[in-house]
Length: 208
Image (cartoon, rainbow, N blue to C red; front, side, top):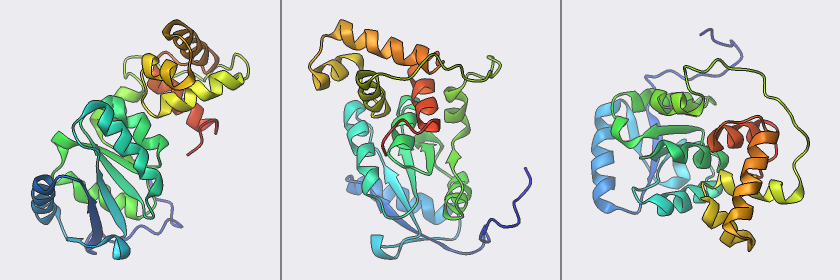
């Protein structure tokens, strides 16, 4: 990868001021210890941070709810997730980096440095899940504009909601929700829900 000379990437030797956002005091202690070993990182209050490290927790739907709170972040944020299905929700909420909880370690310093410099970083294992490696990438096919209902559905997909939760949110049946989800995937040329969300983000169809 070549570097754009106009991109102000800061030296990896410069300490990174990081705020740690987690509701678990034990986890805060553990991650603070990991950060101390990852490189020159200073854990600071929100007001002086350059980057936020946002813990999504380990609970399924609860993790998605926490990721929604990313929209309130005032600095570039790296989200820590436990499930690859949470990547789309994290990106849609505005995360500039997404890493797996199990992979948090020495590579975290590089991720925080890149995000501080304006780059977007996704853990290799998570990125592989966005577009299956064995499937050749093809130009996205457009099969028409999304209807108003389909636009609502893709927005809810970006929040990681299941068909049942989408149905509950929109006051429609599970069968109708599934029908609209399938319609969104067809129109966006996507084979998975995650691909549909990524393509919708690319087209600017999702409100951040």
